Length: 322
Image (cartoon, rainbow, N blue to C red):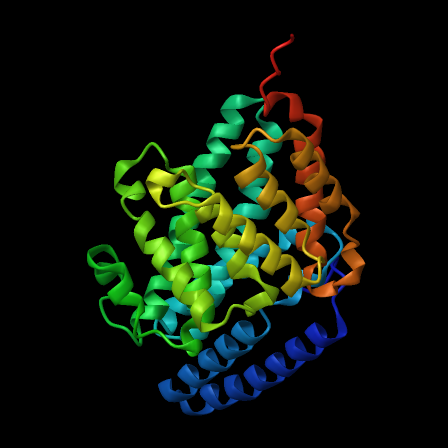
């Protein structure tokens, strides 16, 4: 986070102050000794702080403020990864950050623009696609620190590749799979990406085995999407509904995205308009302040839900008149 025009949470200010003090001390030592070890320690100290404070934006109530701030934060993370390329925490931060930014501020904007400026929407989707791939690659790098050749093995034998992963890999497993799955979704016209779908499915199924309660049912939400695929691609509407019910239970109904995901992944393919509208209205009833850790996410998803409701006629075929 940056000071100045932004209002920061007290814990963020404290973390920033502690970081600055540490770096000032280390910088003084560097100027006196010229020791490259001290410089590396300073860089790692900053990297550790950034990796441990990556949830700062989640509770913000101003999406536009976060939209402006996140790119700087992500480029800072990338700059530090140039110095400490094997910092697992930073690799996770980059994977998670680029995935969230691509969804919240690029792909969502593309959907909102599609009716008024199709070319601009197409450009944003392409940008989101590239950001998802960047996120995926950072996640795979993080996983490969403990599981060498993970990327190659995932494409050869996905289930065998994820079998050695443990709870300690959970966050990287989830966010890498989420980024990869999002890229596959946007790149449906790219056969080489569709071929990666079994890897994404294997990662998410392994993740739900390791910790189904991760981020209050987030893995179940991704599995709603995957199980919502056609049966010839391995999907199952029945399983999708079970994942939805479990995700709502784990989140206590406080994640608006669950209802939107279910509506888009199941209600639209089933052409069940009443269910779609009911789920969207449930998403809009979620109080963003009831779960501060999900406030920003809920606000963004609810904006998308309103847009989808406004365009519901385009999603459902008219019933034949008697």
